[in-house]
Image (cartoon, rainbow, N blue to C red):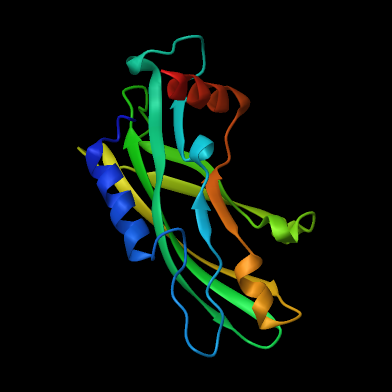
Length: 178
């Protein structure tokens, strides 16, 4: 488990349950269900270290976790609109003297690949208040997908994760092996 602790995990579970599990936000009798939303396990967390070879706790600039999402969707004859609030949990590390975090996360819709709408990257900048080492950031998004017919909507699965550097992916893979 990351250093963000059990409370972040509990919040993520609560948000996932609130969203109806696996991303089904709900439906009406006139519309098909919303697309499923998945948080990509290998990219759901990031630990960023200060530049250099050090990789112990004193070298951590920040840790972040995709803590969940809430959302809903609506249909027109030719378009699906998905509104998501993506929750990120951030913790400032000992090496973060600037009290600021800059990172990126992605929202991918494989059904739309290779168009530009297939993957969008969103920047996040957070400044920690004095005496604050943890914070929660909610990013509201509106995604729109063209549809030939409403029944196609649920096939637009949505994936969320951090846009990671190669060494961050390796760090996550090694952490999971333990």
